Length: 445
Image 1 (cartoon, helix red, strand yellow):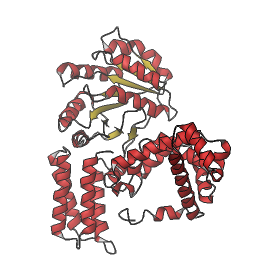
Image 2 (cartoon, helix red, strand yellow):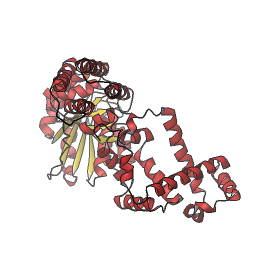
Image 3 (cartoon, one colour):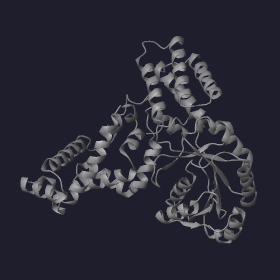
Image 4 (cartoon, one colour):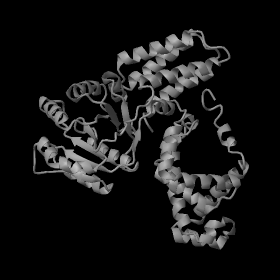
């Protein structure tokens, strides 16, 4: 879960608003202090926190519009100010028509720059761009080998030269080959700490390459030192955006988020896991929505699109609402869920679900069940998948034996199927019933 501790603290603020008998100045002061405490514990810049809390207090104490619930009014102020604090409207990178579009990644050693470059390559290749990675990290041992291995894994062309120790020379040598690509991702060297040598190298590369985008990679666990680094890199090459890595861990991440405000370079992407697909475009509105438990429908739709085609989704949706739902449909759903990533990540994107305190171990058990059920279904015949009602005791025993499961586990899957089908019949012909379930869980709905 993204910034779990900060999210839990902010959700508690919303609960305090919901449970308050009256909304008065005393409550507003308490809420502002709670928000300050939550952000400071997350290593956020003190000046920025004070400015944010001042804005919330001033707006909350103003006369509220008529016919607006005072609790909704206050929640909306918190939401809007946190969104503005994190950059307001998202500003995605616009890939120009000029070929190649050059994106240079900079940052210190240990922030995940090389793996992030590969994730970015995967992200753009899935969007039909012809992408290549150029490694100019001549200092870290095996850096170029790592780039080659990652490129091979995600089927992306990589350019390296382990025999040359001058990154400018490597770029000059490979530059003529780059014009055939839409996007070139350039991985530069990092160090354990900022040094004059590193700064000079970045400055020289920036002058030679003239990248269209210069992205600073910052780890979520860096704390407030992230701001100082962001300032120095900004002076060296004028960074145009930030990628915050390791956002799925227990790190506080406030420093990395504050760095954006210090440099006026917006956060463009977050990495939220170890696999090549665990990178998402940063959208402040959706991010704050997740922190507050309101969900992030835009990110959910993007994740869903990557897991299942629009045609498949429409067809599955129609069958579901008609009550024409069998094991094959359920199998397709499970396959899509697996592609979407961990269940906990998907849950926090669904409006209302982020406010439910679902135990981590319960979610992990559910993920384990999905994998087990998929194996069980692979042991069924086509006839059984299309018509689960024909499953007799002898068939259940055969399926259990073939999948290395118990008959009880097969029965549990059958029970899950029947419950899902029952729900589809309840909502038959009325998709709006789904959204009604969210009302009352999402502030302002």
